[in-house]
Structure formats: structure tokens, C-alpha cells
Amino acid sequence: MIFGVTPILSVIRNFLEVASFCVLFLCLDRPRYTWKRTWIYYGIYILVETAIGTAWVLLDAESYSAACTTVLFVKSAIFFILMSSDNIFQCLYNLCLQIFILFFMLFTGLSCTKIFFAGNPWVDVGIRFCYMIVLVCIYIRWLRRAYREIADNLKTQWKGICIVSLGGNILMVYYATQPLQISLRAGREQVLFLCICILLMLTHVILLYTLHLMQLEIIDRQEMELTAINNEMMRKELELLQEQVESARRYHHDSRHHDLMVAEYVRRGEVATLLAYLDQREKEYRDELPERICENKTVDNILGIYIRQAEHKGIEVSCDVIVPGMTRIQDRVFVTVIGNAMENAIHGCEQTGSGVKKIAVFIRPKAGKLAIRISNTCLGEVVFNKGIPVRKNGSGTGILSIMHSVRSCEGDVEFSVEKGEFTTRILLKI
Image 1 (cartoon, rainbow, N blue to C red):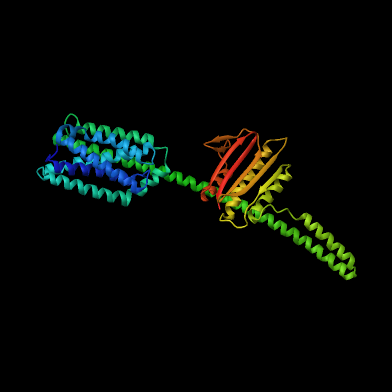
Image 2 (tube, one colour):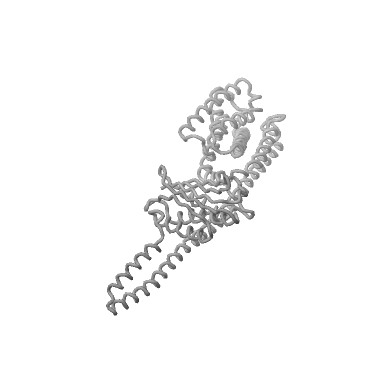
């Protein structure tokens, strides 16, 4: 049932229907293109659909009432999927939700106009306009942010939810149009249809709430992983600090004996012997002083510690490292990324058993990024899950630490095994 089938009313009604549908969908969508370009495309689509719908209702109002919602759903599904950056199931669920809202708007507008305003068509137009304004405000104020958080964090849980929503919409549209439009049926059937709409709305609410709970669970799990990562980072920093403390203790112990020897030579007046002793000590200090690997003190200390650990375990280490003394990369990131990669490399060499054990470290700045490549001999039996090496009990905190720190620097990380070598490749912005 459509009140006042005139060209002007038909244009206004169709424009409000299509515009409401598109605007509400966009409120929850993440467009593929810029907002300016998106609004141009949607504006063209709204005008085209308004023209088609107006011509259809003027030519055959009965078939329009029975099939317009279904036809609009099919055409919009194709257009929205092409315009959206969400996956197809997220897009279809958003579409199902807006079709339900649109259909409920049409039903309540026509029913209120018929019951309370004697079928005045301009009242129907006013109800649709107010309905759209109120919903857009609700979407922007309360729903969009929560929905986008769910959609952005949950990418693989939408298939079943989409199927349930799509099935509910098909049943609602079929019941409302077959064998006769719901607004022309008896009051009892209209009340029943209203109850069905309420149940369908509750279904949407429950689905979204379930997704929200799933999101909270994922966030809790991520926080636990971050806690483990932070603990691992603290452990690495404590190891570095302990190494420095041990070095300071050895130096203090040696310098005390050195001072006693100098004092004894002075007391005896043996200047020539003292000079010979000092010359000998200078040569010993030069021999004991560890070779400097690079200008960056943090990277130099980290590599120094793990290279000594590797050599103590019979692992050959080769280095080609150039790191500027000052970078924008935090020391904590260096500790986590290089420390975990070196520790994993040492473990990988140890698991090979007998034979040649090698670790190759390559770190160089390239095009505004710091390229890190650490390779080690391995058994070749590394299992990957979506490009991430995993152990029997999971990926391991070291890998998670590396990936988290690399993401914090907007960098990239890649793991691979080739010709008996496990390689970690990392790019960090400097």
C-alpha cells in the first residue's frame, strides 16, 4: 500500500529510502576509497536508484510494493561490496541490518499514517525523514565506534552471523509481501509481524553483543601476551645490566691489585721496572678490550653478550653490522628484537647437534630503515603457521616479542627456512 502515488511524492519517498539505506550503511562501514570519492559514488548511486524506483512505482505500484526491497538488497549488495574495505561477510551483515531497519521504517511509517492520519502521504514522508535523522544520530553517537572496533578486531567470525541475519531478513521480507503486503492485512497479522521484527532486532542485538564479548576476550588475551612480552624485555635488560655490573666488578678488582703493584714499585724506587710493568698492562688491556662491533652502544652491547655466549658454546658468529650511534629506535626495541633473534639463533644451532654451527648477523641502514638479517644453521624441521614459526606448544614468547616490537615501529618481519638455515628478516624505521 502506497499513499499518494504522484511523481513528486514518489521521487521524495524513493530518495529518502535509498539515501537512508546508504547513509546508515556508511555510518558502520569503512570505505575502500577516500570519503570525498566515496560520497561522489554514493551520490550517483542514490540518484540512479531514485530515478529507477520512481519510474517503477509510477508504472506498476503493486509489483513495486512486493519486490522493491528484494531488488534493492541485491543491487546494493554488489555496489556496497565493491565500495567497502570490509570483507564480504561483514559487508553483507551490515547490509542485512540496514535492510531490516529500512523495512521496519517503511512498515511503521505506513501503519502510523494509516491509523492516525487517515493515510496522509506527507505524514508518511515526514515520518521517514525524522526516522532517518534520529537513526543517523544514534549510529554516529553510540553505535559506529563500538561496531568498528568489533569489525576491525574480528575478521573471521562473520560467516555464520551473516548467514543467520540473511536468513532472518529473507523470512521477514517474504512474510511481509506474500501473499499480500502486510499493511493491507488484518490487525492481528500486523501485530504478529511487529513481534517478528522485535525478535529479529533482539537477534541482531545478541549477535553484536556476542561479538563484543569475543572482542573483549581477544583483548584480554592480547594483554596477557603483552605482559609476557614486557617480562621478557625486562629479563633481557637485566641480563645486559648484570653483564655490565660483572664487568665493573672485574675492573674494580683488577684495578685494586694494579694500584698496590704501582705503590710497591714507587716505594722501592724501581722506576724502570714500573714503566715496564705499565707498558705490559697497557698491552694486556688492549688485548682484553672487546672488539667494537658498531657505533651504537646498545646494539654493540647486545651483540657482544650473545656473541660471547655463542662462541662459548662452539658456535661460529660472523658480523656485518653498521648502526648509527643515534637512531629513533628505542633501546628497548633493540633489546627485544636483536636479543630474541640472537637467542633463537643460538637455540637453533644447539638443536642441530654435531656438525658446523654458524650464525650470520647483517645489520645495515637502507632507505630510511634499518635492515636486520640474522641467520643460523638449523635442522630444517621448522613448522610455520601463517608465516610464523611455531613450536609444539605455540609460537613462543620470543617470536611474539619480536613481532610486537616490530609492529610498534611500523616495521616488517619475516621468517624463513632455506638450505638448512633459519633466517629472521626485520625492517625498522629509523
